[in-house]
Amino acid sequence: MRTRQQALGNRNIVGARIEQRRKELHMKQKDLLTQLQIKGVDLNASGLSKLEGQYRFVSDIELKYLAQVLEVSVNWLLDEEDDQGRLLPG
Image (cartoon, rainbow, N blue to C red; front, top):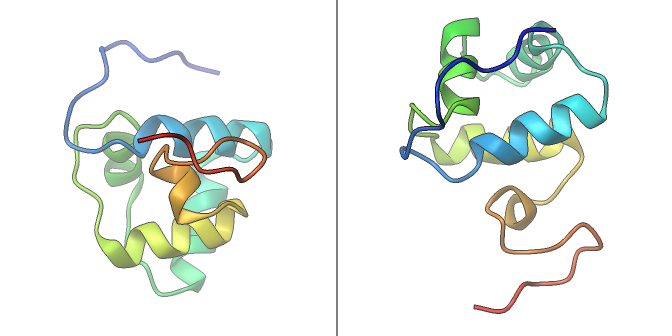
């Protein structure tokens, strides 16, 4: 498994959580991409890598389906709730 060479960007706040959850599920990027494509999300490997690295903005539809495929809530991806589903303070 390759490690990230660059520091995280600042184009989204969900990228780190997407990568974290994907790895918790022992899912490769290509597996995540396949599941997203089944749901109609057109994202390629470069786009996912940039998204996880926080170098790419995420659309609302991508966010919705990423949460579904990764079996988490949108709020969790947005770092607004903890791992038990409790909302984090403000």
